[in-house]
Image 1 (spheres, helix red, strand yellow):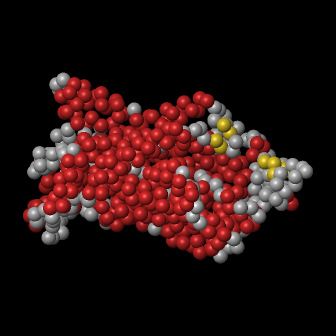
Image 2 (cartoon, rainbow, N blue to C red):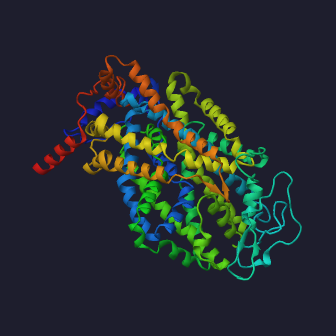
Image 3 (spheres, rainbow, N blue to C red):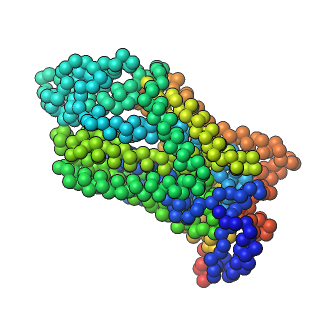
Length: 639
């Protein structure tokens, strides 16, 4: 953190600006001041870049993107994916990075730039808080697998354990019944075994139906890890092994964020970089397996006819959006700890491309192993490939058992998943912590550690239902609905506020004040027209195709639909609520109230202390987007 005593020297360096916003010397870094309280900053700027990459790259890059590629034209899916990554992902990511860096405050209070939409910030914090609760469930399961990987024999390697059924299979060859465990039935009285997952395979013998049970890896997941009940209506008891792992997961989050960005800046060097090393190790090892090349070719072989389907383009857009994580508040919050004059455009592009390229790179790792599994099982890759926890916690662990020293590879794999999950969790949870600290900066800034501890304890208690027998149903319901609709609405409102209310030209002048350069015309067009249009299309597609999830044949009851709908709208409730509050507080008639609440608040301005006194909204006045774009095009033509 810069010393406040250096402000005089820094103010002299500010005079080195040349006309047009260009600089001829590097300016000093001053700690932004928020409500008179010094705000932490990244110790090294590379810490911020790694934090952005870690936030964007998560377990979804490994268990969702490859499956989407397979389902939507293989290599051809990369065309719409990178199309939306450039026209939608980078503009939204850059917008939020600029908002956080300019204001020097968390997502909760950055929207004082337009008080009428103050509730957008509260919606971001709420959706991040809800997401951290169920997302830590993934980390919990990974922790349990990681601990189990240190046993002399991997517990999902073979049948014969107390959780296995009589039809448990030691391998994943669906056409080989010799591996079915015909011994005693290893039943645990603490939970009820669900036989609905047993399937009938009529492919090998047309005259008879033969029972084909689940593999040892799948039964370990279903009956040991989850110990699942029959449905959401039967949550059962809190499972000791999962509740302990859930506690450990929250302790890890607390320890990594105990000093905010100061401690996180050191942690990300491990959590953001080590997964790439491990991915490369798994890719090399996977390519050495028989059938790996078939799986990779299956992954990248393009089917361009799929591009004529509207749903393929929509799924590419949604994947870009949900993978990068805009509208959750984490990007704004992490950027608020930046130095004011940092080149944030470079970081936004690097983090966005890292997310897209990691998804593509991870597909090679996954499908090399899926090709090996398909060859072993004697089936096609499509029968092996799946998405979600089933890919990372069933299919891949099953393949690991076929490798030499399977314990070694299992530890590396689940360590990689743990690091990927923690990185994404950091950004969401930090958004929640910073929002509360920024609400009471003078009272809580010195007690940040206790705020973090209190929130982790609260989130642990609220997340205990995921540790019950019906936890998987709770997790899937939250994962399906929490971010299904509200984040699309929030992203659309972000573009609406920046492009059409606050004004894109005014916002570009704010960015020029930070970096000495305005954004290009393509970014402006995206903020005002392309990105919000794509958000509207995505919302329409999401609403029209939103269905209840299913898990292992279980159909959610009708009342679960209403619970899911409530989960999806909770983050949106503060938006109309604060609209009413702000309009009520404003003076004048209704029209005057709207005009007043659409203008930035009196304390809106740059976080850089030396600019606060001279910053004038008159010089950064609102200009309608199309007028500013026409002026820009006209000036370029004259040149």
